[in-house]
Length: 145
Ligand code: SF4
Image (cartoon, rainbow, N blue to C red; front, side):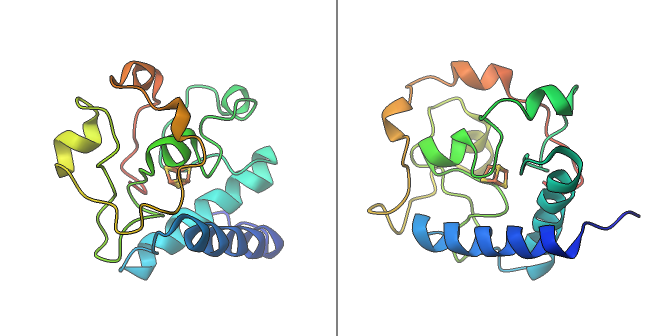
């Protein structure tokens, strides 16, 4: 299996640690989970020049990489503080309390509260009451999610 460049890995680890601190989230309690996502981000940096989320399947990665919505930290993180694997609570659960009802995160995990509401959500003004924009969400893959 291909490996990312060490430079890309180092860059993504630095970014992920910094963003976790800034957003008041934690690394997943299982280190292998975080390592897999960071590696996926680094692979996308090598392939696309952008930290495209590795937790989704994209019909056209190059086209998606031209958009902002799934660049880490993606719109879901910046608006709702929701990330299933990388930026979670210390118990490993994703924060779901800001998600619109009907979002799959609410259906799977229920309401998971944010222990640090004063941090993160730089784009919270874009939040909607319904998950309409999420119809465009790429399919989740089972590899890292
Ligand atoms: S879901 Fe968003 S915040 Fe989480 S790893 Fe993917 S792009 Fe990053």
